[in-house]
Image (cartoon, rainbow, N blue to C red; front, side, top):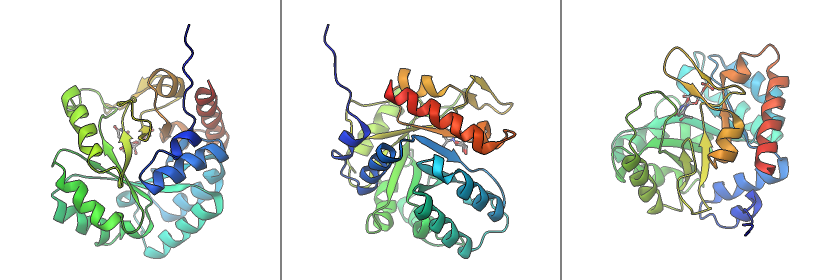
Amino acid sequence: MTIRKQLSYADRAALCANPLAQQLFLLMHTKKTNLALSADVTTCAALLELADKLGPEICVLKTHIDIVTDFTLDFTKKLVKLARQHQFFIFEDRKFADIGNTVKLQYEQGIYHISEWADIINAHSLPGPGIISGLAQIGLPKKRGLLLLAEMSTANNLFTADYTQETVHMAEQFPEFVMGFIAQKKLSSDPKWIYMTPGVQLATGKDSLGQQYITPQKALIDNGSDIIIVGRGILQAQDPLAEAKKYRQAGWDAYCN
Ligand code: 6AU
């Protein structure tokens, strides 16, 4: 029987061309967490409270900044401060999907100035490589990272196996800026890519709007992903901090497995 040694997060850090991917792998290794919190709340106060309380448990805090009703740029400064204090990266789940010139403006300008405070962003590959070139013009000088949506968690989505593979090929053209994928499973033998998997809860199931859940074990052990993204599984618990600790433990145990 041959036993293949799996590369650790720390081993893989050394293989990344994107500096943020490197830092994230190292953070996961030292902080011992592969949990990303999807902080889908609608006020600055609620988001900052989550970041402060759950920050010590997570490697990434994911925002949907356009659901926050009382957004100010001052709020982003507070969020960045908490990220430094508790050691996590900020991922704005903007799912860019337009031509390069437009996404550049959406990334840097508007109300949100996403490029100023978000370490990580994501984008659909649907428009072709120009979307990555556009985002890279803003993000690369700031040493940011991009995740491409290669698969989605929802029922009956239109992602095909070909689309997913073409997305991986597109990423290969931009190793300095693309850090990995939003996907349900590992998609390539290249160990430099980071996989983040949403649609994760402690029990399998679904919501009433097409979201589908797999367990941390399924995502990380069976599917070979790296980071579990958890929203309502934690946010709707009686005690979100205690629940986050459970997910953190489940995620870390699965990785050590
Ligand atoms: O755990 P939930 O279902 O409460 O939240 C899941 C979060 C949401 C979605 O916008 C996001 O993950 N998401 C994504 C991302 C991260 O891009 C892709 C996907 O396929 N499914 C999904 O749920 O904030």
